[in-house]
Amino acid sequence: MPEGDTVWNTAKVLRDGLEGAVLTGSDFRVPQLATVDLAGYRVAESLSRGKHLLLRLMSPQDRALTLHSHLRMDGAWRVYAPGERWTGRPAHLIRVVLRTAKSVAVGYHLHDLKLVPTAREPELVGHLGPDLLGPDWDPDEAVRRLSADPARPAAEALLDQRNLAGIGNLYKCELLFLRGVWPWTPVGDVPDLPGLVTVGQRLLAANRGRWTQSTTGSLHRGETSYVYGRRAQPCRRCNGPIAKDGEGERITYWCPRCQPEPAGDVGKGAFHNA
Image (cartoon, rainbow, N blue to C red; front, top):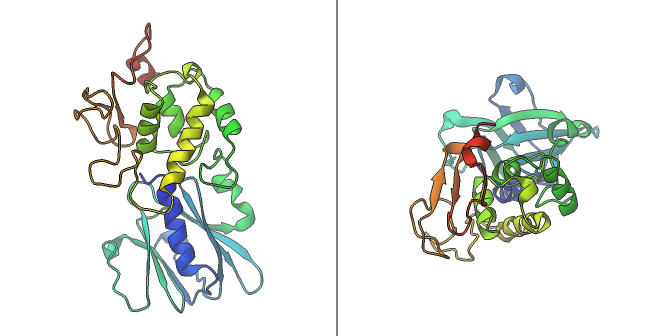
């Protein structure tokens, strides 16, 4: 699933291609918006909120609307020049097309696609915690939200966008490795929770503006992560084998030596089944 930095980059692509321009046409290929015509609306702003994309539009009569989308695992936005071939994805995955005089934005396999008055944005994203890449980033509030459920496993709590918005599996795994935290450690037992969220924000911020995500400082292929995607490969710190648990959205990588299970812990199975 795209994480906060990837969604931020996508918002920038839309901002660079559309912001300030007037839409000459729109084509929605989802039933709930099939009859909507946004021609004449000006693209006022493109921004991300955690993993959510918000495209704010303004009509000539000053009617403010927000087009909301979520990329989830497989969504994408691409911007093309008029007449340029659309090569991003198969045509049957297109969900929306926005046209201006100088560009065409095509949304592929988008999820949670909604068009609402901008004043109602909080109904879509108001539940989110502080955005690690947003102007509202507040580490104290993130810590407060994480601490509200001290028995919850740290890995699970970091993925909950109601606690802090933008972290996915990659950053979850890398962050816990960098802080030496066993992924199933209860939040209440994590040492230096403020330090954990601060490092998390720095990781996402370091990758903002580029598509290659790296937590190691290297952009070379095969060198961009410490544990994520490296099952059975040697840990870059201790040379022990990296472990993996779960699949899909519930996948976790960690180093059993650098992130040992706390002594006397009941084991991850109890947390998984809670």
